[in-house]
Length: 368
Image (tube, rainbow, N blue to C red):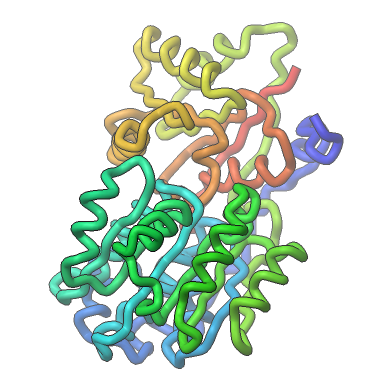
């Protein structure tokens, strides 16, 4: 374990912030110059007041500016770019939008949110991700559509096979760019950017902006407005603690925790696919409602597990770090680090799955 992520040091020292300053937005959704039907769908989605990134980003995007948005996951970035771009399509049907994200799960979530915002508006989106039928996606792209949401590899495949004509997409969103860089998508991203029209609006969202990501941003954007709402690296609404094993079995300690009142919707993170599969089977035999998500699961299995966790059919989701970024799951009460994360960044992204949308959460890390 790198010393920068010694949980016995930084978790115990992390202070829960009891009196967080309440954010007061400068805008209401009703203030923005967007269609009444879109406003109605925003309200129907349960969005009453903009989050900080929405409050600051929607207006410049509506004005056609390129934007760099720096914000932690779970801050409402998706709506910050979807709302103004959907409105842009409504005003001008020659506008087409391409949204590129690092993971299939995040792409599915954006597609779900896009459909909610575009209800009864005749704005159509297509999901283009690996692990699903390329033929069906190619067929969908031949039909009328305004927005494409996908992962770099599949979008590149569809472009090379001429099912997706990137030169017609004059609005581009790169989301979770730091994660795409970590996953080795830099070459694919540069290829896709080279295929886009020069005259376009470009939006760039990332939790961090290291040198390589900054260099990509400056090659991709024109006179961007930079918006940063990253006030704290560690999620402020998450109470962090360690669980000392003192020679006890991790599995036994986990069962003891999960049996307690209040552990209603729990994400358990581990290091290996094999280990997490074994743990999920063990908990299932003990009578817990559990599902697992990791790289050995196919796309349908992963999406089914996520849906079961979201709708409460299972209350424990066992995951490797494939699930730690970008997932927007409501009301996760606890994140448990069954295995210590490999890096401080992984730790931050894991515990960021709880304490979202102005709710408190608890993160526990097992240590010997």
